[in-house]
Each structure stands twice: as structure tokens, then as C-alpha cells.
Length: 231
Image (cartoon, rainbow, N blue to C red; front, top):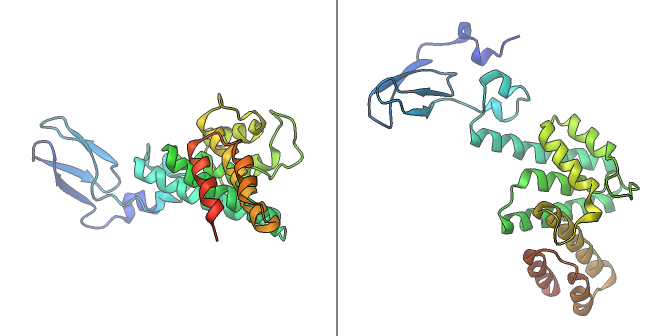
């Protein structure tokens, strides 16, 4: 079945229109489902300024429907993916609120560290939420069947799913020579543990300093300092 939004039999007057080329000012005809067109006069290729990509942000078949997605739409899809993964992880843990709380803390710290390091959030945040769902897989490089199943259920891109599972499987190998994504995951988990120990066991500043010695990023050390004075 063809998407009604892209099927011309459902179109209305005004769904074919002219747009001024930003390169030379000449008019270029667009159909409403054109993602981009090239100006016949100057050759400048530009995106359709009137196209509504709303459904593409959540539709799993968007790329098949309208071709290569614009960067802003791809970003929307990844933002929605993170939300779906967070919900799926909570469903996985059920009433295990301790695990839900820890996963949420790891994700919160991972987001902050990723922003500090200017690293894309999609892989890092998804891995942070899924970090412990395969608990018991202690060996480096072990399979991550639960994480993989959740990623398939939320229809994550295959490439992203592979990157996330790789990060989780090799979490034990997160040394200074590891990728920045792996170091962020390591540090986010570390910070979540420090925060929990401070809250539950009254971890003092000396204890925080000792734990923070294992930080692999500057952002982790900064966040550890913040935790010393947190209310």
C-alpha cells in the first residue's frame, strides 16, 4: 500500500508549486513530495522548503517512502528512538525500580558527557539505557541478546544497533585507548554509582575522589566535583 501522503490521487490544488531558487532567483517547480530539486538555470540543488516531514520522523519506512532523509528528520527519528528505548527498558525491568533508576542515571550522565565531548547522542544514550539489560554476561565481547531484541523491537537502524551492542559487549575494555563513546559509557556508569553511594551510604568527599580516580574523561571529573556539593 502506498502512503496516502505520497499518493497523487489524494493530492489537492497547491500540492504542486513554484519556489524561488536561492542561488539565482529563478522559479523551480516542486511537487510536495520532492525532497530536493536542482535549478534548471544555475544548477543549484536545494531542499524543498514546503515539504512536511512530520510523519517521516516516526515512520519506520520513511527512507523507502521519500528516499534519503534530510539531516533534521534523521535527528528527529533518533530522538524518538531514545524515548522508545527508555520505555522498553522500563518495561523490561518491570517493578525493579532500582535497576530502572540506575539506567536513568547512567543515561543522564551519558547525555551530559556526550554534550561535553560533542559526541552524537543516539548511540551513547541508547547504550546507556541498555547497559545492564544483559546482566550476567560478564565476559568481554559476550553476546547481548536482550539489548539486541529491544533494539529490533523499536526498529533501530541495523548500523546503530550494531554500534550499541558493540559498546555494551566491550564495556569491560573501556581504558584510555578505548573510543570516546566507550569512555563516556564507562564514566556515566561510574558517576551513577557514585551518586547512588552518596545517597544510600553517605559516601564522603574522600570516597568520591577515590572513585573519580577511575574517570576516563574530563567531564567525568567535573561531574564528580559537582556531586561533592550536591544536596
